[in-house]
Length: 508
Image (cartoon, rainbow, N blue to C red; front, side, top):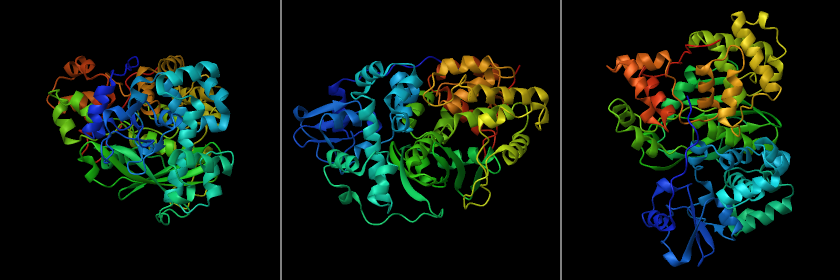
């Protein structure tokens, strides 16, 4: 069960400057340093000479620093840090807004659309974001567009006009002006040679910052064990899947084979995400959804520090310090898959889901053997006769009921949703119990503090580790606010090369 949002620890400017003096990578993405004497802003770990205390000011976001007139440092690239782990830990209004802005909601729907999703007026949302992050929604969206544009300029051979519209700018002139203002140079000066070759034909190879340690092989094991035929493929260290994006289908391919990042010290590593989209405007959304999938923004050092002292979890955390909670690229898909998998084996769930995809999913051309369909949309499954689904009638009715609730807007499974409200809405649906609602919160809404006390996998893992399952459940509260990671560590013990799927114990 998830807990209320967590308050961010107070950190004063003297403590921030101490982190800058130490070039402490743990604070990258938590605050930014504006250097008045040079007019640039940096991440705390910038390797350049540390400025004098009197010459610096601190900002809660890259957008805040840009709005104050600072240019991004070319050396440490402060706008390319992983996102703040506080966004998922607290899940407040500002944190939820940041996730939606990163997904391109402001570009597609404007500030009124963003505000409506969050249940605020545009003016009040602007006040909330400015108070929390030092910048309003337009400035935050502008910073996201600038970062996407620089990534495309530096890592692809797209024409500048293509980059401008792919990054979400409304005109080439706006793109040129923003890049000059944020980076202090014309867009052409950012391009460093040709793009990296991509193995997925027609794809763009884009760089994705993640905090280390990062256990890519363990994440791959989980994704490979739970993949849905037609929608996902995993082979020899890489994972690929289809994406249902706002303007059309896409394909994602990730190399997760590097074991060195699993034991790397706290810092930042770069994953290369190969993305192919039908419409270039979807590149930003594809990258944000990839970040969700790999849990890029969590602070693994904070998780290890909190869980590492527990007698049961400590050895597991030290063995796999970079273990991630696998996320999702589509919250509705995750919830529907969870309902299908209730009370059956992983193999059985994959078989049923493969049949659903083949019959109700949209067929797409991907160029990747095995990737043939998009996962069925909720509106499509809402119209299916539950009696004809390859599953027990009660589960079929639960699946169709959930699909109808999502399609009708009664259940919001995007990252900007309010977690308690989503849980309440799910539990109100026939056939969905607490286990399912909380598992969806962990995977679809990135709740870092979910524990499943009735899960058979938890009890099996506890027994194998020589512990009384009831005693483990009783003390799980001490693992808050990182209980989702405790859960993954327990599941990881059940198989040497793949995380087994958990099974719900209660469903109406």
